[in-house]
Image (cartoon, rainbow, N blue to C red; front, side):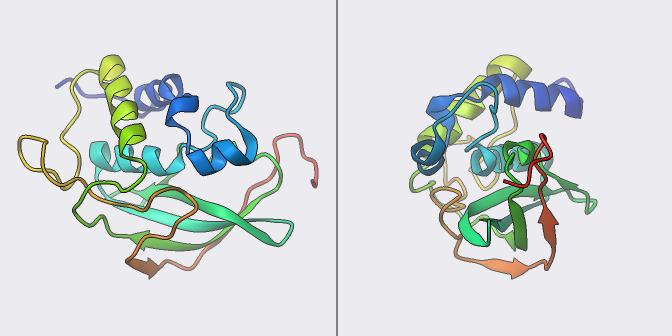
Length: 175
């Protein structure tokens, strides 16, 4: 397996995002559009990045105008650096807060399994062979970690990381 740069991983992910890998909850809320390709992909992206780079999964609550709208997933790498390859999906001054580390228990993904596998397949086509999913058997066929069904569901085991991030709109609007 040839080493990848973070830029190559990021570009391969962006080229792999599509309506058929978007969270059904997010798709129902706002559809999926090529001008915001990471919309609805934070959970499956965080899982795949965890497969590639290890570390922890982190989930936080997303609020807009004081109302809770969904959950957002990203990664904390083994060296402690937090990496969020889908943060730019938020373009309306959403606030992400209440970050918690999520442990990947074994077992199939209850609702996003097909999207996760499809995203991995597309990444394999762009990057070459990927490591087996975290938590799988050596043959890559065993249990795959469950991290909840979508950004709208909380995972079962969390640890409070206690931080809040304001995500400003690219346009600078307050709406």
